[in-house]
Length: 267
Image (cartoon, rainbow, N blue to C red; front, side, top):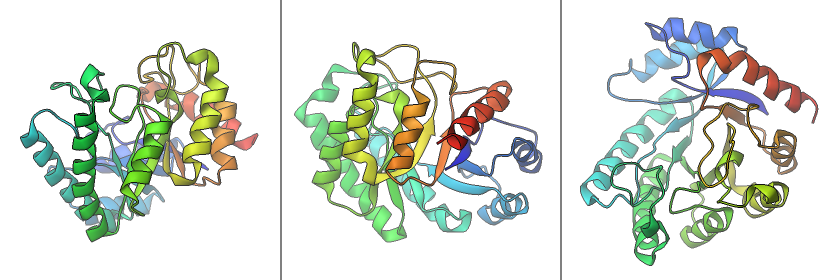
């Protein structure tokens, strides 16, 4: 496993200056965001290659069960644009959020997330997304998160089984799976999550949490997540990709890199 970073954690006036700073931290993997305002993919790739930095995944997140159907359509169009950039940037993984019925925030819980209609909309949205994935031969990695329609490892397994697609995998974040009252069962729940999903992990995230019932929002190593267990489970399931730090400030990068590297080295 290698340490990665969410692009945008470090920002400078130019791409070149930004990547120079990233490289000084010994980071050679980024989860990248692409948009029409970015430099051309060929330019980005040239600058990444010059610093031996790889793109582990592109972010394709949108609200897949947005109550506004037009916003879902716009999100799908965005996903196609992201998929078009993958080959040029040297990655085949796009991250997704399964979404929420909250009309303003896809990461905010909503009681209707647990309805049959929300699941039906998710399946329909995912079917359309997987058409794009198959066309561009990319992997869609969705993230189980307590505030989303897929709010547990069990529901993630159900979605994978229902879709039956080689282009659908999971982005695992150990800080995102604990509902209210579940933190005391952390070891048991992490073990279960990896038993259900370990063979389908395409990307891993690293952040932390200080309470259950919501997605973690702290920098890795500053909260309650058992990183020795989390990283150990990643290793045991054969994961050899990047563990992408996010939810941290630039000032926290040195600490988080050291924290993760020490634990990876100890495995």
